[in-house]
Length: 210
View 1 (cartoon, helix red, strand yellow):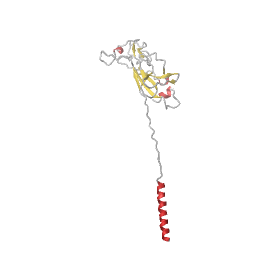
View 2: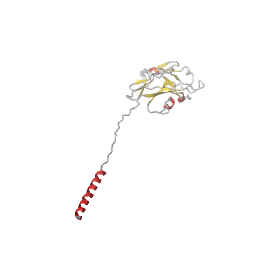
View 3: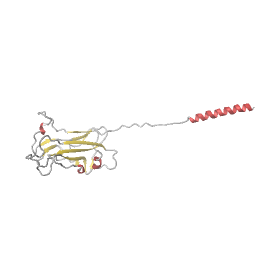
View 4: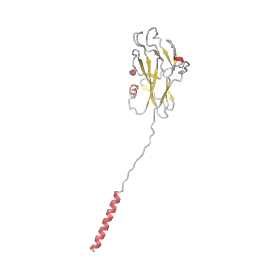
């Protein structure tokens, strides 16, 4: 009798051990895989009316050679948002060569490009004045009244910043005013996503992100 009790007790212990082991494996995990596509800002800067004809084969378009004061050359920098998905805020930086300041007494920009399209506004806080023999820098944002305008995706173009560059009448070439040699007016386009920039999207703040 005692022997039977012992066997039964041993069987019960085995069952408890087996049940306990089974409970130990009743675990669960779960994971969610979230797939995102990441958009990108993609802009181009073109000058549709800038003539690239170079009959002299000197890497200078014919229309830009041997300019006289007051003569204009077509130049229409145009920024296009070619991203398929992402709207953008866009800026344009214009760097203009200056005289060496022998005459007139203070450096002036060699070229004019007014008027700037009314859809663009100069960011005065980013301007860099002429230096003798150096350059002046102007930054423009697409928008007005201290508010950026969004440039939609899918090949949406902002109006051309300006349409022509003119050799300024304020330089005469009668003295060494830094007019010799080739001179470059450099326009650079910038684009940044419109989303996720925070609450302060004033032009000066956004420009500071570049």
